[in-house]
Length: 376
Ligand code: FES
Image (cartoon, rainbow, N blue to C red):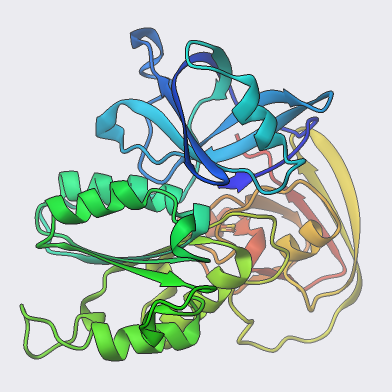
């Protein structure tokens, strides 16, 4: 995650002072920050691969709260971040320039649902798609899986504009060298000719078709199946449009949605998967909701857009991550009215029966709806 937000942003998360141990520029516009975790804070900073922390820092007279995914794996026992300077006036430029090794920074406890259950005893195939700085949580996942799961095969498809702009290439290549028997990496370039049409262009549906037909056709360990057929989990991280393209391409090629995990690296107000069902039209809907101890009232034109989507378009700070009923970030209680929950890979039957819903996958089915996002 690499989103730039000024305060005040409603947050309910604990911050601690962590010492910066290393700062390094790794491409023209990307740098890394490493923090040590003192013994006293180890329990607070226990994390899972794929999670992120928020850093609080000043820039241009304001305080920013920026979320950054960790590149470190839990066994490395440090917080390592990869950060992009998006523009000349980006606050992350100040973050890079203002702090030196030895300085203390405000770092939040780790959070995030872009995680996978570890299965050290299984033979798994996991593929990852990353765009640019979207590599950060995948790097944490891949290091973690290579460390913990001796039988798991990993494939990384990593897109960047050019060879000059590949964050963490050295680290990825070193991993590939160390685990060559079960970690394959393919770099794609959208703005550079590299003499191989397959590796040129964006990571999109067409590329996925090529990957399936050219790279993942044969499985040496199982002659009755293809490598693509053996894929257990897909991890995607990058910009919204890329995620939408790739998630749909994987889904249309047989991977169940619950096995397609993604982390959006920007605010993205579009649905990831199209709605596959039709509903009776309901117009002029009043949606009242409680969020972080505040009461809100939103007016929805109709029920053509899912609840979370509509609230994000209207600028409400509703939590979300996957937008596809998998992560539970948008979980809330339906206190009044009716909704249709289109897909749910997160709530148990009991939770659903108690009235819990996922706002990202719910469509209004009554003119008045009341939700409560403050579940704890
Ligand atoms: S945002 Fe992930 S379940 Fe709704």
